[in-house]
Image (tube, rainbow, N blue to C red; front, side, top):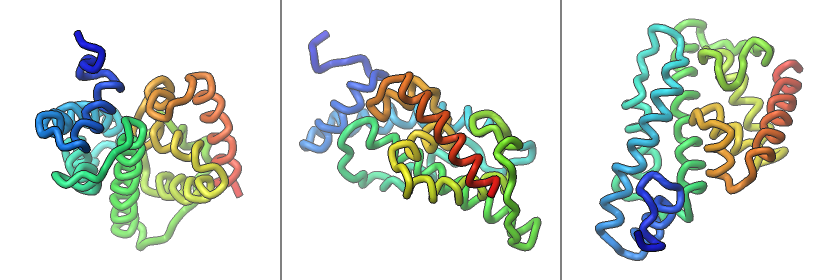
Amino acid sequence: MAKNDAPTGSPESLTLLLQRADSGDRAAAGRILPLVYDELRRLAAAKMAREAPGQTLQPTALVHEAWLRLGGDHQPRWENRAHFFGAAAEAMRRILIDAARRRQAQRHGGGQVRLNLDEVELASDPLHSEALLAINEALEKFAAHDAAKAELVKLRYFAGLSHEEAARALGIAVPTAKQWWTYAKAWLYREIKL
């Protein structure tokens, strides 16, 4: 295997494909969607498996909506894997927030309720509209405080990435990702508790 022909599933190959597509390589551009779609579908399925019963949003719909929000067939220039998956995590976050707001408006007349972060384990508890909205509000404040750590939260919580996957996407060490996650959870807990 040549140096530039990394296995399709590796982070290096996606970055390489993004660069080749940006340079006008149509074959590379044609290989991006299936590669990215499969990974996003896997992440969405894992995230949706934690949803409360009766959830109408399906993993395939989440991936399709995220893809459309990212630009559909007219994708912007992606610098690398981290840039793409950061944008994908943000798109998924916004989709889930929009869905939570619609559910809340239908069930509760639009009133928002803050929840204690102890009641919402960031990476494992089913998403409930009130909790999701409270976390989103706190996350927006956290992003103003520390954008890099907020990106980690988006990748872990909204895109369902593991510590290892999020660290790789952000280009940081796994221990750093774990430290950032601990800090972010404490910060968000304090913000939601107030």
